[in-house]
Length: 207
Image 1 (cartoon, one colour):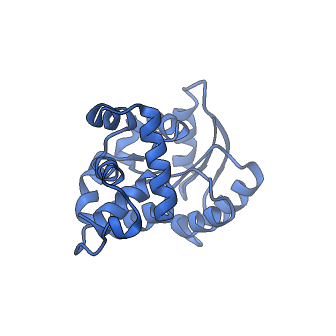
Image 2 (cartoon, rainbow, N blue to C red):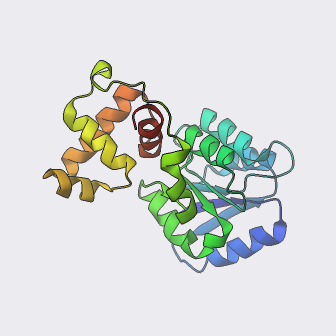
Image 3 (tube, rainbow, N blue to C red):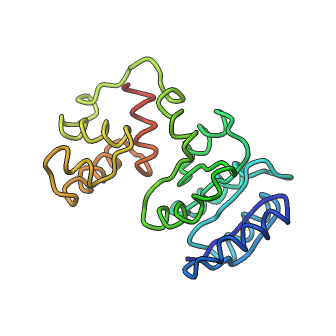
């Protein structure tokens, strides 16, 4: 997989490059130190994954991510930062980032990249425990009114609780293919990008 690294500290970029290239399946195509460089480098290289910090000079990681996703809706953006501010997490996941990791979780970085490449969304341990409270609000959403049936509502709840497709299939006695089809239908009906946004939607509108 081809990866671009963006961090305002060049030494951090070089250290991350050294770590990532211990995996023969990972190639670091380019490094940059600002949000503007992130946008430019993404347009040039169109990598498999953009690994990016949040607080940087210029437009910063969040704005850069929004700009890239507007132009490349399928872009895989994984944030790696020292900042675990709730507002940053909400903004990053809400825009469609594939994950949010804290730099202290550096040991999980390579597995996280492989998970993102396989279509999963990844969250650092500290971040994952916050999701239910970050997006909880007064329930105002009626699944039936949005055309969701009981099975779709059940699957949405299990996605929100962090179960993968196999675990959902085992829980509901379905095949993994059927679960994938249900999730695809849910995303279409609710006009959402991926299962992270589906989980956010669940905690914001239902739970």
